[in-house]
Amino acid sequence: MRTKISGTGMSVPDRVVTNHDLAARMETSDEWIQQRTGIKERRYIDPGTLPSDLALEACQRALESAGLEVGDVECIVLATLSSQADFPGTSFFLQDQLGAGEIPCFDLRAQCSGFVYSLSVADAFVRSGTYRRVLVVGCEVHSTGLDISTRGRDVSVIFGDGAGAMLVEANDDPDDPGEILSVRLHAEGKHAKRLWVEAPGSGLSPARFTQEMFDAGLHFPHMEGRFVFKHAVTRMPEVLRETLDIAKVQLEEIDLFLFHQANLRINEYVAGQLEIPSEKCFNNIQRYGNCSAASIPMLLDECVRSGRLQRGQLVSMTSFGSGFSWTSAVARY
Ligand code: UT7
Image 1 (cartoon, protein in one colour):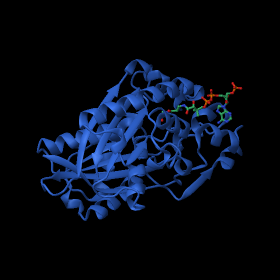
Image 2 (cartoon, rainbow, N blue to C red):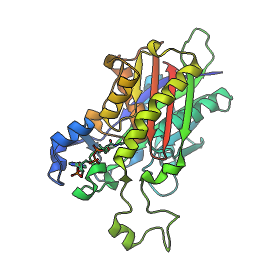
Image 3 (spheres, helix red, strand yellow):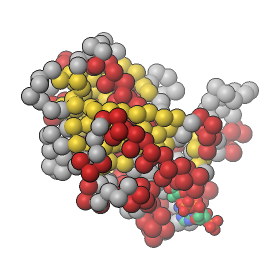
Image 4 (cartoon, protein in one colour):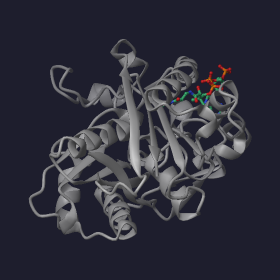
């Protein structure tokens, strides 16, 4: 049994936060942010909007584009590092809002690589005959967890809020070329603390969260930016090539390359190393910043809706993130 991508959707909040808006709240500048990351603006939710609201809209769009109803979906896999509550996962709130009945749903935690990890799980469900149609979702609300001050400026300027969704389903039509050809997943937990949010956490004592932890800012992301950058530019080309080898596809045959949107400079470097022409790459970090698990499905949806990716074309999706975790997938759309 083959798995095909039958629908895509995305959702971002209306509120645009520019680099100038951030510069009003911390010592930074539009010039620094654009030069180092390529980001011009990102979106932040307004009070009252939930992560599951963004995920809901992305899923509804994915279902609409696939020509399917929510009743056709048999399982939901949602990737996030910014869960709506400590437990249960965001997927449970989404399942209820979607009106998806009692279908199984769960969150998958692999940070910026979470979407491709989830896609791999969904692909395995479909190939094994467990479920015919799975909604795969990436959903992040970073804005409520950032240190929007000079102390946190290295991390906070790069993140934004958004959600992306993909409907994958069994393809038993021999005339339909749509197929996820290969997915590779990797992780290296020894670097877990190079990019992490420590608190609240059950590894902490005497409690998961104390006033001291709050004062020390342990609830904000901490990142060794240069260290992460160096690993990203090494691991992404490695796993991309590995995935193509398994799929028996040449790099030159790929029509569209999508890279995780952590930093435009990382993606330019990776594309340069692999000698990928810039017209075969698509980035949206300039407008949305780094939306972690949501970045790849958001990119894919924008490419599908703008006609940048056509049925029958080959798309490569590659990510790197906290964990460390890195992944790549290649699909015939
Ligand atoms: O999505 C998960 C994976 N994440 C990534 O892949 C991110 C990888 N890392 C990066 O993209 C980059 O490391 C950053 C964009 C986060 C930071 O860029 P950098 O070129 O590595 O800067 P840096 O942290 O080494 O800091 C250089 C200087 C420092 O000042 P001094 O010590 O040279 O005086 C920082 O204090 O830039 C300063 N700085 C800033 N200045 C203005 C750090 N952040 C800012 C800022 N505005 N926002």
